[in-house]
Image 1 (cartoon, rainbow, N blue to C red):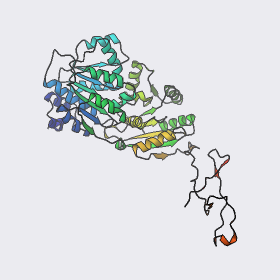
Image 2 (image 1 turned 120 degrees about the vertical axis):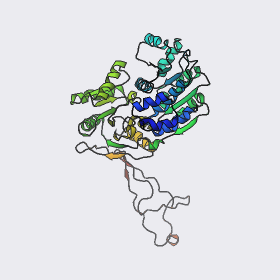
Image 3 (image 1 turned 60 degrees about the vertical axis):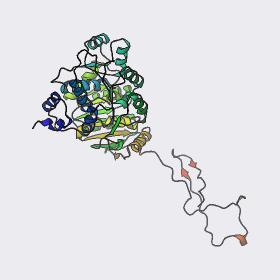
Image 4 (image 1 turned 180 degrees about the vertical axis):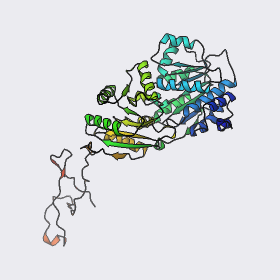
Length: 445
């Protein structure tokens, strides 16, 4: 029996089943099983599924099936796939080519970092599928190189990330130029509220498929925190982890390009083979860094969030957050680099005093508690925010009754018998260990 027999239940075109068999696809993942039948029906879909769950095949296979079902040799581009990063666009083009290997369907890649005129010439060859980033595609449209009047299927992959990166205007513009009768498939790793406007404007009565709640994402990844005192201490911890933690490949995330470059220099000086990836790197440098990591020439990549999407590297089993990401969704995308397709992994976040509140908010967002870990010889003096002792009544004290008058000794005849003596109020030391803070009056019992 062909390995792709379980995919045959979807009644996909025989050439696609042949490709699946040649690629040793055994059975559909959860997102593929849920999305492919609905997409084949022509429904608009809004799908939330974790990174690494196989969602690319979930939209590429029904898209190819639709194009194969009715050939239109004289039409313009029939499918448009929008993605947030060059790396994810390149990865998606490879998937299209793999699944379409026994067909005549061609994909065309349009992203930043390549010659604009060369891309225009590529578009004039009339490819069936255009894959690219919103910014560059919008530029090509403005130049008259991107006719969208024949688009039958519009795919917005990693839609939440495109929104985060400021591509909403370009996405809505390109979607508005496509025919209203098109099918639209929107995929994201999170169900952020910011997507509502985009969903309302580009989807028509969509079928909503939520494969994973945020709290269930990356369940195969151990999530740990290590406390640190300062940036230099974090650098020592990263050096130790990369030298002692068992891993095949690792990625270290920073929030800024400057920190990524600084950390890379420190690690190289300590004997690690490292590549750095951030927005200032040109396309050639970015491709080199990712290829070297995939090929195993280097085991470590230091990156800003430009690499948090679209980076699919086999054997990537350690993620270190040198800086805590600025949102729960971004945390999900970062640690989604590891633990892919059922594999296990470890995500370690380094927490200084400036990271604590972010870490706590992400714990609340994910509805989990990170595992606290310490490394012998590198333990931090920082142990989290100092908490004031709970205000309220001091032990053995009672609130004085004033009845609206100044407190004073009552006449002996009116004094209640056997009243307990009042304890002297204790002082509470302030967070800086200096002057005592005044204790608030305890609430009435």
